[in-house]
Amino acid sequence: MGTREPPRASGLPFVGKTFTYMRDGHLDFLDAVNEECGDIATVKVSAVGTYCILSRPAYFEQVLIEENDSFEKTDDFDVLSGEGVLAVEGDTWRRQRQVLTEFFYPRRMESFATDMARLTERRRDRWEPGEELSLYDSARELTLDILFKTLFDYELELGGDEELRWAAGNLNVLMKDHVWALPDWVPLPARRRYREACEILDAQARHLLDEREERQDLGDDLLSTLVRVRAERDSALTDQEVYDNLRTLFFAGHDTTANLIACALHQLGAHPEVRTQFHEELDSVLGGEVPSPDTVGELEVTDRILDETLRRYPSVNLLPRRATRDTTIGGYLVPEGMRVHLSLWNLHRHPEFWEEPAAWQPSRWETTTPDERQEDFTFLPFLAGPHSCLGRPLAMLEAKIVLATLGQQYWFDPHSELELENAGTARPHDRAPATAIARE
Ligand code: HEM
Image (cartoon, rainbow, N blue to C red; front, side):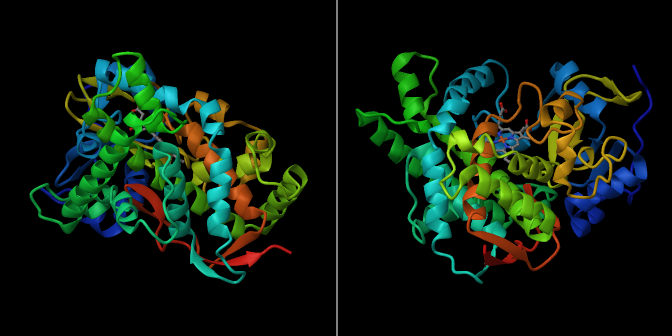
């Protein structure tokens, strides 16, 4: 067992690095700590206490797989997910994960492909060539349309359903840097907004669940799957678990996918050679047709664009855990009870494992694959191990269909460089303003 404490990042007495964190934001803070201390460091941020940041593949493997039993989820997840799958552990987690997996299997996701393309066209057809828009806001609106359809079989009105859109858009406010870094007793408006958002979404879920239980013709959406499981066996979710999981899925599936789409569109706009390859692929594979589950399988350039975006601009950038017993990581002691933050942000740009890590280069995926990179723990946008992302098939299918549907008519000329800020997920700091350019 190691006895040395991991390198400690410099900071002021009592408050440690709190000011740096609040001033520079979470991503610059991670870079500064990594530069000062390397792949394992302890830092102090007032509301959180002293915790350990990890950025090396071997440390991820240890925490997520080899010594997975020695680490648990932190209580950040309880606030967000209640009794939902993102927060619970043990048998309750296993039961919930099993039920939800029945919904997320890839074949079922494919049944949503037509709706995904149609909802994308619905929005795209309202744009005019030369229109100025925010890639981030547009991607958020669109991913929300798709999420409501896949989870609830509910079609949000274009330009309507304002209350539901507001509620879904406010589920991430607790994870913004200034809210997360301040103690719970500080009465921030964000905390009130979060409670209101939960009430609105729970009420809608309750209403739709009641309605679905009366229906004879159940569909493929998540609520139908849950009602079907309830009728078949008693491992089903309780009402409270259903509400908490629906909120969890909105939180886990909305901004994450929206950021991926917004960042990919931005980078395509900023890299003309990649854009040309992308357009050539769309034209030759789709030939002007709407993308379908069969044809998206052939879109290899599009795959590389998305994988590279997930590497360079990972929307989930940090994963918190807590040590349940004393552990040695990299020869240093991580004591029982200490928080451990796995930094995907630094892992994905680690100079020992990536050439030109800061560059966005989809061509790097011509000589390696996401699976290979997951096996050596250098690329983990959806994590690895038992808690890895359930929504991966939905997110990847959706992002491909949205990119392909928009890319057949437009490309987007960005007005600024892509810089990320943390708001629970890492999003374009200025919402990525761009001009929609009609393709020749
Ligand atoms: C690009 C999009 C996405 C990314 C990058 C992403 C990433 C992640 C990551 C890193 C985790 C692990 C969290 C942790 O253990 O601390 C996770 C978990 C999860 N994600 Fe995703 N996600 C995405 C989209 C989605 C979507 C669309 C859904 C569903 C609608 C979803 C549902 C979930 C769920 C339910 C979990 C918890 C799994 C468990 O703890 O057993 N995700 N995701």
